[in-house]
Length: 99
Image (cartoon, rainbow, N blue to C red; front, side, top):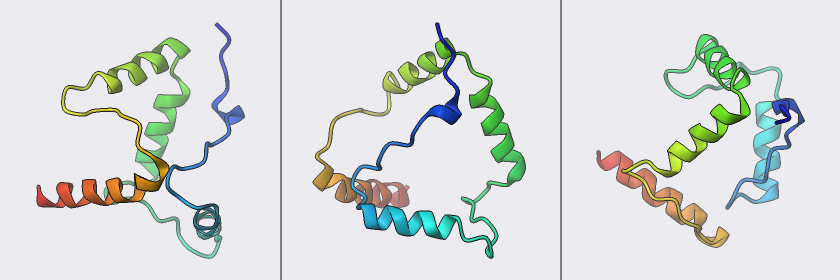
């Protein structure tokens, strides 16, 4: 099996996000005058740890990890029309906040 470098991958468009919004976010992320914004609990060490994990995986390990995500007993994977993606995301956020 051919090992494909992750650097060769192109990032697919994000579902439910307009091209204008994505471009604005890209500009914000590349603003060199600001410190990078990270999710709560993330720092440079954690970023490096995650990068090392994924960059060291074999194709078989990547596939197994993806398949495991689809088999998780507490989640469902289903197609959602692009027009509903923002609403579904908002619904999930409200559900998570309720604890």
